[in-house]
Image (cartoon, rainbow, N blue to C red):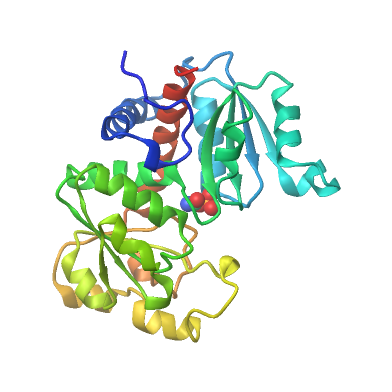
Length: 307
Ligand code: CP
């Protein structure tokens, strides 16, 4: 049986192209399973998984929970807001207490960059990074690649542009690593203040003009402006941002080309995307959400085999 080269999924940076291929192939098989009338398989029976969320989430958390149920795993859920973290308990103490209950795998979201990497040096359970600050969100990038492959047949050779708040986005960094490892051409587009200075070192193109970037790409992965991570003003107003970087139907129609629109969610409707684009035939946003369950099943199944 093929195995991943890693024990934890901390970031796409650590994966080989073969790891990515294995995850996406396994996810294809699980997608077929979860579309059957009986959606549940016994693959992770007797495996206990804790979902440890120190930051808010809708899609990632529910998707992991559903994926665990489909695999027959036992699960427990931890939310920092309703926990003893509020009484001053440390991250390591919190996780060690969860592990003392005989937990095999931790799915963790944390606001601090490197939090899951820190944990991986201190505990023996498998760890999946469900988003660490502005750093990586590996399962989002994997489900994005799965969705591109499903829609366009392959990721290799495709032109993918990531739009918006690249500076604060863990989705952007994980997608850049994933897309480059699979042979896609990658561009980023947004206001200069939201494009990191090091971005060229990652082998991506930079474009500041929205229309030119849309004309270049096969796939537009549009990101949310992360106001909660911005400590200074990077642009004058959301209205001005929408005027220069918002994608609407009139603009798309004027390009007269096929383009796939993606968004990791949550969408700021009327800011980075208008509703008539988010809900149009160009959009695969809800396919991304559907595919997230199969991709997370694949990741947990493969890591459980890598003790
Ligand atoms: N895409 C994503 O991570 O969404 P949530 O923050 O709702 O999990």
